[in-house]
Image (tube, rainbow over all chains, first blue to last red; front, side, top):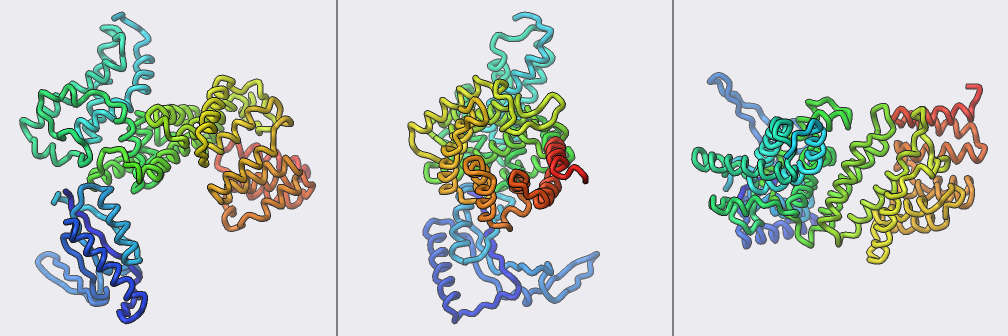
Amino acid sequence: MAEYLLSVWHDEEFEVDFEGDDMQRIVAQVDQFNADLQSTNTWVYGNGLQPASSATVVRGTDGDVSMTDGPYAESKEQMGGFWVIEAADFDTALEWARKATVACEGPVELRPFQSEG
Amino acid sequence: MRADRAAPALLDSVFRREAGRCTATLIRVLGDVDLAEDAVAEAFAIAATRWPVDGVPLNPGGWITTTARNRAIDRIRRERDSDGRHAAARRLHEASMERDPDPELADLDAYVDVVPDDQLRLMFLCCHPALARDAQVALTLRLLGGLETPEIARCFVVPEATMAQRIVRAKRKLRDNHASYRIPEAAELPDRLGVVLHAIRLIFTEGHRATTGDALVRTDLSDEAIRLGRVLVDLMPDEPEAVGLLALMLLTDARRPARTAADGSLVPLADQDRAQWDRAMIAEGHQLVRACLRRNQPGPFQIHAAIAAVHADASTAEDTDWSQIVALYDQLLAHRPDAVVATNRAVAVAELKGAEAGLRELAEIDESAVADYQPFHCVRADLLRRNDRLDEAIVAYDRAIDLTTNPVEARFLADRRAAVAPTT
């Protein structure tokens, strides 16, 4: 078995309106996806992130540690949340990534971890 | 065995035939693409020194496979003894394989038997949909075609370092992601096979009409694509689209001797000396098309092949059954409603009903979809010329020439343009 990161990406301006119909639908879909991950022993961890504006970059250089307000990458696209899954192989992980993008209605990046789970 | 001065040439042809098959099996045995490539290269290096002295073995392909196998077994043995855990970590994942991925040494001989399916596994691995198209093509040519990286770089006119990086990156991505060495299951097969067919088609097209380089045709790539098409049909005889692709490539490549004049210039289909077409290839292509028709599960490659077969049937350009070709393009549009098919259909309509009718078909196509599509502008220029709309034809020729990357084709278009506008 190997571990993979499934990260969800969206535009920085993305506003989470949990009352809206779209969000209600997505939340229901993601709940179902999470349940599927858990019932198949694929789930390792998963959660959504607060907006990228809440991020702090902490950087250590020659013993000095500095902090900057805001996310590391100053790009329009930011990570909105992620899952860590355990899957038998690449194609199995890709199949979960397909289900993930359908559930959360946004692009999902699949990336393997270095060590096998 | 006999000493043979021709050994290097023979070695080369054995290499072309056996390298892919041998590499495919050794990837399964060793669970690692790089180790497999090393073992095969080592076997050919040994052959290169032994054959000129000892003579060529009666079954050169078998000799190579056995030698590479033995090298592989030696290697597994060494790594099991010394650094077994490291070796295991490097292996490609083998989840769907029934055999124990770490077999007892006693079973190794059976384990490294050449299984025809291995080449199929390798095709699906090289053409994994998570790889970019150019990476799929490069990996297919490297691992299944046995082409050296510099050769592949020359074929696609990219720097050697770029091609080397492309191949290393693709192999690394498959390994890091734990890609399985397996044949896709029935449910995923149509999509996965489609990717393989398109990669082979791309290799053929690049060989048939080189987008770069001085010659119109790059024979080695067309030959390699046809060879891969044959391997695929041998291994998946029940996939009509695979048969269709092979038929299409044979029927297209049959015209190769007539496609360029003695001075290297391009000869369009209508002006080709059909006596120069390769009759054996046409006969084989026809036979495959008929087999597809009997099966009656039409798909885009089969329909394309049927169109090529109608062309091949006509002993002169005037004898071409254009109404049948238009009907086949109608079928194709139902499968693939895109601008490429619509452009080709317009050519057939123009032959059937005249240039004006063809131009009307072209006008129906979404302009944004064909803005940079070179064949569209070639066709449009030609139809405008035939319709005596010369000013518009010149503009269209200029656009077509701008978009042309093959110098032979650019020369042909420039000549046509000059004939329309003799004063400029």
